Length: 234
Image 1 (cartoon, helix red, strand yellow):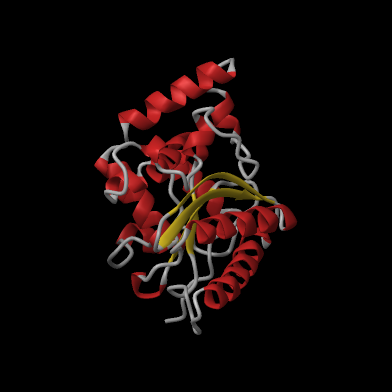
Image 2 (cartoon, rainbow, N blue to C red):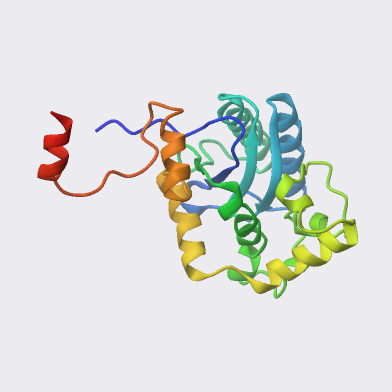
């Protein structure tokens, strides 16, 4: 069975995951992390993709982005991937592929999952045992949202502005949100949706998405259609 094309629609937030081939390192030195960020910044601007949050790990990275056009995200990821592989291979005297196939992504319902997805990204280094607190990790957007660093790459989503009327209030509210963490159910749903490519949101949201694309946005229910459904379709 042919694999489905990626689910990409402009104006919606997308959770993106890109992994190293066989979980190998994609960033070895601080210069690698910085180059990946610089390339992400330049390509996001070129292809009209707003980056709301990110985390770069040693063998994978996550993005939370909103593309302005239907092909903005795939074009950005293609250009980013190729440019970074050329840099990495030259820098570390290697050849061949770096990525584990094509990137994984799906779009999410902002009101239901966007802030949870941001916290999910910020807490990734903590879950991996890299740091004790998310603010101790330098290669994510977390410090920007705490007001401890200005990150030119970041375009805050409208939902972030609703966290408070002043920068201090928003920063305090966001810090509390991340410290509260996300539930195991949210973590599984965010991971599975990005890896499978199915849209993540409430049934009405998913149904509305389906009206906008011929690509199936949700996994079909298992089993044969019911007799009532067959009759209604006649």
